[in-house]
Amino acid sequence: MELGSQIKKYRTDQALSQEALAEKLYVSRQTISNWENDKSYPDAKSLLLLSEVLQTSIDHLIKGDVEIMKERVAAEDQRNFERAGKIYGALLLITVLSMIPLIRLLGGLGEAVWLVLMAATLGAAFLVEKKKKQYDIQTYREVIAFSEGTKLDDLEKMKEAAKRPYQKFLFAILSGLLIFVVLRVVDLFF
Image 1 (cartoon, rainbow, N blue to C red):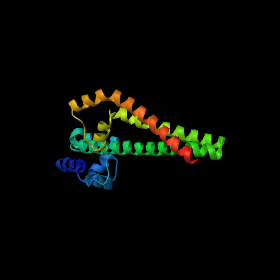
Image 2 (cartoon, one colour):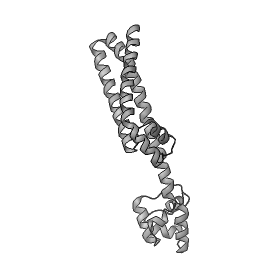
Image 3 (tube, rainbow, N blue to C red):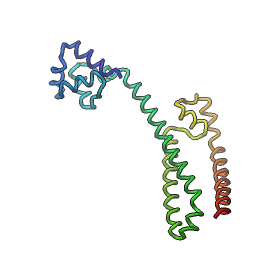
Image 4 (cartoon, helix red, strand yellow):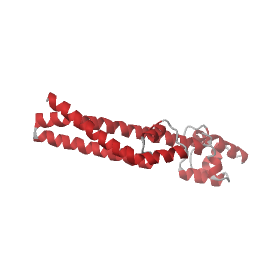
């Protein structure tokens, strides 16, 4: 991050010591040192005070940090999306595979447990769909590009948008067939 070097630059330009700047900002000298050495980051209130005391805009102070923050946010978004997808996948698999064994082994209690599992799976599916809308990714190619940290160009995006209705229909059909097959296989063994 460049904020630390920016604080130091503006502080030395005004011939302020770390101690003098700390007094004006109502923080310790150690806090100023930590900011300048990128060990910590000032909060919003401190950034406002810094910009006033150092007679510069916040934009100039955080020059370069905005891009780094955008990259960190994008990486965090990817991790959150992948985590939500993994949770949904695991819950879906458990829900599908446990239906018949739970009901046959535990009867009414098994049904209740299975309904709780189903509710958790639907909640996870809702979360994944919400994130897909938030990041404007719907098709398989869009999801893969997002997971890799890239974006489709405008033409590819338009092509993928045209595929969305067909892919959703096909996904629904294939999901139904898969569930039918899994239930048949599980039914044979139990």
